[in-house]
Image (cartoon, rainbow, N blue to C red):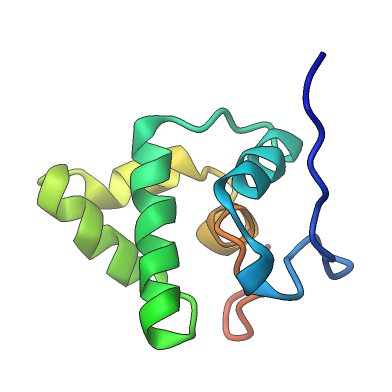
Length: 108
């Protein structure tokens, strides 16, 4: 039997209302809802996003995540980000990492 976790409150688009309520179990549950099985590369991006948020109190935009991934995956970081989150950085990565909906980005 699969353990269930208490999901934090979310807005009508599925983004966490309070990012501080995020944890890795929440990330796994959110990813499962989106049909994503989290790989080590997913966690690399998600954990970077969380560290960035903790430091700056704002979601990292995709270019920061790409720069981080580039250090470990030279020459393919941009492609990798889109392979990991094929329906878009805001629509998938930001949700799974527990960010509020980015205002400047479209989820379409």
